[in-house]
Image 1 (cartoon, rainbow, N blue to C red):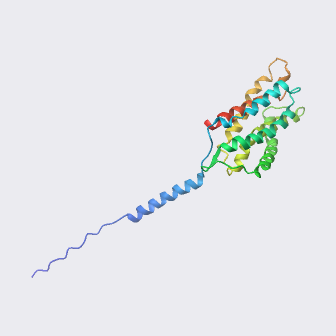
Image 2: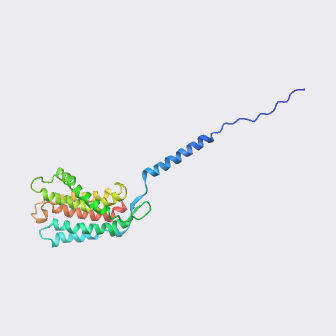
Image 3: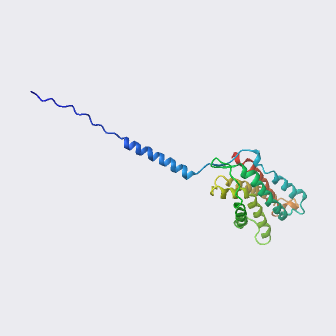
Length: 218
């Protein structure tokens, strides 16, 4: 009798392990990307971040101060910027889906950082054409105004683990205000407010006001 051959099961090749490995790699890359990017950081779009105090200080500087006293203006700016940081800017900054809580220990650190930044800021202003020998004190006062105007952004950079990208637009806004206001100095009008660095201080305040008002929409 002929011997019947047993039907052997067909062998098939499965790539399930490879698919699992590929999925795990994709998942790992996604998780790594999330870890690398970090939690979301943004400033809420609200009128609560409008720095009205800058307009008040600008009015004082132009209309009420004696001979455009930039030093007294700076003394007035520091506590008002701290109040703005505490009550408005920080209260509307979101980091990791949570409103940032104010960390008091970072405030003196931020003030110290703003003071240190006045030196490189002054050097940059000199490289861009500011007088070196005669008006060095006035140039440093201008850089101090610039850095204190950026104080809320400096604090937020420390608070948000040095995420500079979202906050650099506020520094740019102040710098653009200074740069545009330079056109007033060479005009032959012979006005007191054309003296260095009065127009640039005015421009810095206008730039800071615009930057903090619309920065969250950009």
